[in-house]
Amino acid sequence: MADYVERRSRESHWKVLDKEIKLEKKLLSASAEGAKVVAFYDVHLRFTLDYPSPEEAPALKGRLRWLRKHENELSPAALEKAREEIAMWRRDLAEYISTPQDAYERLMVEAL
Image (cartoon, rainbow, N blue to C red; front, side, top):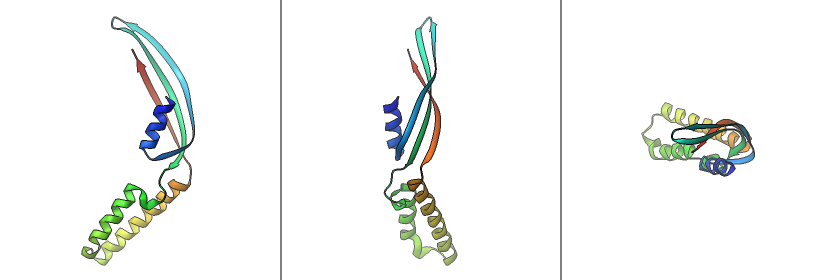
């Protein structure tokens, strides 16, 4: 379970700072098809975004590339609005890169 959580976190570009995985409950049932075990895990992760800078995050990288490509076609008002949005993304991503965040989820694992 821990390997799965770590792999999925890396795929989401999360740098895991701390994790807690607790087996909440395990159920065993039998049927004509055979026995089945279902386990529920509560997962708590503390993480930051794993990018060296906001400009490396795909959400901002794409916006910056689009603005460079289209800035000569935009009106002054549209250009200002695009720059404001980029500044907002830059601020938010900088916070997620530098400030630990918490994530909670419940995972169900089923085995036959």
